[in-house]
Image 1 (cartoon, rainbow, N blue to C red):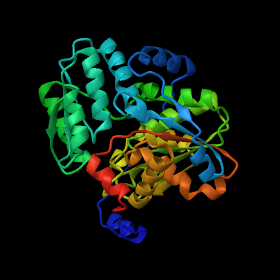
Image 2 (cartoon, helix red, strand yellow):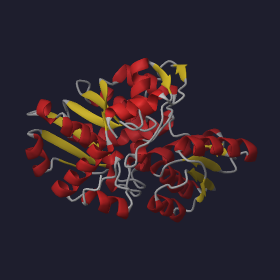
Image 3 (cartoon, rainbow, N blue to C red):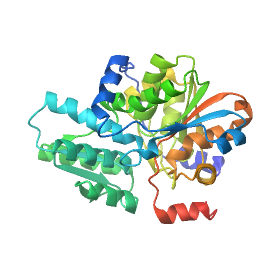
Amino acid sequence: MSAAMIQNVSANFPTSAAALPRAPKLPDAAAIAEAADFLRELVPPTPQFVWPQVAAAFGAEVWIKHENHTPIGAFKARSVAVYFRELLRREPGIAGVITATRGNHGQAVGLAARLFKLPATIYVPRGNSVEKNAAMRALGAALVEHGDDFQESREEAMRVAARDGLHLVPSYHLDIVKGVATYWAELFRAAPDLDVIYVPIGMGSGICAAAAARNLFSPRTKIVGVCSAHALASARSFAAREVVEAPVSTKLGDGMACRKLDGESIATMVENVERIVEVTDAELAEAMRAIFRMTHNVAEGAGAAGFAAAWRERASLAGRRVGLPMTGGNVDAPAFADVLAGKY
């Protein structure tokens, strides 16, 4: 879909806007270190490499952080376990948890629910990733398909949570940010003084966690957010300095397919992020192919978004130190086969 087509679709979509809250205080070094200690057995530290072919192609020192190597194949493995620990300290008698997802957040809920022995129900939109659905079921979650996109699934999960007295697990929360910040702390300790990091944006936990860790461990590093050109809520909200709802039509970037973000996450981006780059599905596919060719790692669309944005800007990155998180590798085999075959 061309930029003009995206603009035309977006112009005809009824949007809503809301003023931003104050940006919250992000987790400090002690909180991140304590979360890392708690997570160590569930999610061991993941590697970060300067792959020779990637560095040569960019003409830069490019560090790839492999969050595709967690127990659920995505950075979200670090998020909900920390959230549940704090939740159960506040509310030890909860009956169960419920959430909505396109996949990786749901797998994190399933992983953490199994750890804490909590019943979990997960809502996904119709037509969701077959393999992500199978992974969530394998973790013991009850999976319900509802709605045509993430927002409709989320709204139904909210309704059922209120009806049945279940705890609604958010996609964004400071306790989630605290868990996710542990991987950024690992990267910044291994590769201090990076010039720039490119961070995919879904509901905002990843980029807010990057800001928390950057502020503590590598304050000179610039943060560039990356969103799908076919899911512009984060970019529009960042530009407008208010929460703006926008349509979703991405096929490959399901981890970024969010119609509306939390106001606190946008406020944190406004305070900490240099700018936001929009990448198309075609650019995600090109990045997925390049990552596989150069590293033999499988990246899902959102997991390749940082690479895609940096690749477009590679001329300006020559000779610099760049951090690229591979945030997940959970792509269905038929979709990845189509990517490798150049059908995107």
